[in-house]
Length: 441
Image (cartoon, rainbow, N blue to C red):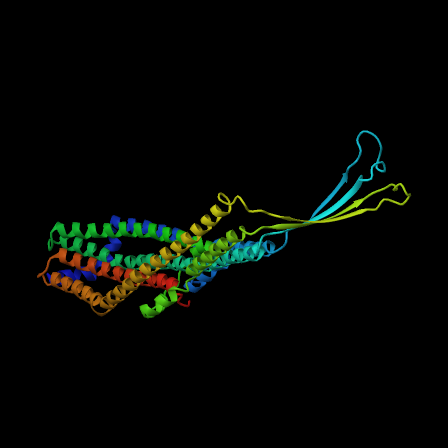
C-alpha cells in the first residue's frame, strides 16, 4: 500500500496533465478574477505601498483636518473683530425748520446739524469676547490635531486589512496545489482499488471548499482596498509592502494614562470649557451699563436784532444704559451661560472616561494578543504542521484515516491564517493605543 501511494505521488504530474479535474477550472477562474481585482495596482506600477507612505498620503490633504483649521482661522479673525469698538455713527439733519412761513433764516433755532456718536460696550465686554473666540479657535485647532490622530488610526487599520487579505490569498493559493495533488492521488488509488470512493469525495469536497474560500478572499481583498482608497485614493490599488511595522513594545499603562490627559481631543474639551467660562464673564458684563458719547454741531444763518450773526451750536452728551429690567434678560443669560459651562465640563468628563476605558481595553487586548502570537510562534504553528505530517504518514502506512489527513492539513492552513490574523489584530490594537497615548509614528 505504501508503495502504491508513493507510486501515485511520483506519477501525479503525468496524471494531472492527462486528466485535469473540473476543480482546476474553478481555480483558474478564481486566479483570473484575482488578477482582474489587482489590475489597478499593476497599472500604477509594482512599487509596494508602505504603511508610512499611506499615512503621509492620508494626512496630506485630509478634508476633515482642513475644515477644522479653516474654522480655527475664522474664529481667530472673529476674536480680533470682537475686541474692537463699534463703528461710530454719523448723524446729519435739519432742526427747527418753520413749516408755515419763513425759511432757514427766519427762526433763530433753525439749524443744520451734524453729529457723531460712539458707543462703548459695557465693562470689559470687548476683552472677554476676544478671549471667548480665542478659546473657540483653540478648540478647533485641537480638533484638527485629534482628527489627524483618528485619520492615522483609520488608515493604519485599512492598510493592515489589505495586508491580511493579501497574505490570506497568498497562503491559500500556495496551499491549493497540495490539495489538488491529494485529489489526484486518491483518484489514482481508487482507480487501482487501493482506496474507496469516500476518500476521493472528501478530497474533492475540501478542494471545492478551498476554491470557495479563494472566491471569498478575493471579495474581502476588494472590500479592504476600497476602504483604503478613502484615505489614499487611487494608490490603494498598489500592492502593499510585505513586512508589518515593528510595533513590538508599548509603554507602561501609567505612562499612557499621563499622556492621555494631553490628547488633543481632551485639550479641545478644555478649550471648550474655557470658552464657556468666558461666556459666563460675558454674561456678567451685561449687568454693567453700556454708554455712548454724542458730539454735535449745529449751523445757523441770519442775524440777531443787533445785527450780529447768529452763533453756531456745539453739543456734547453721554447716554448710559439702565439695566433695570434684568430678570428675563441678564439673569436668564447668566443662567444659560452657567449651564453651558456645566455641560462642557460634563462632556469633558465623559470623553475622558471613554478614552480611559478604551485605553484599558486596548492595553489588555494588546497583551493578550502578544501572548497568543508568541504561543503560535513557539508551539502552535509547528504543532499543527507536525500533526498534519503525522496524519499523512499514518495514512501512507495504512494505520490512519484519510479524514485525519484532510483535517490535519486544513487545521494547518487555518492555523497559519490565524497567526497572520493575530498579528494584524495586535497591530491594529497598537494603532488605537498610539492614538490615545500619543505614541510617535
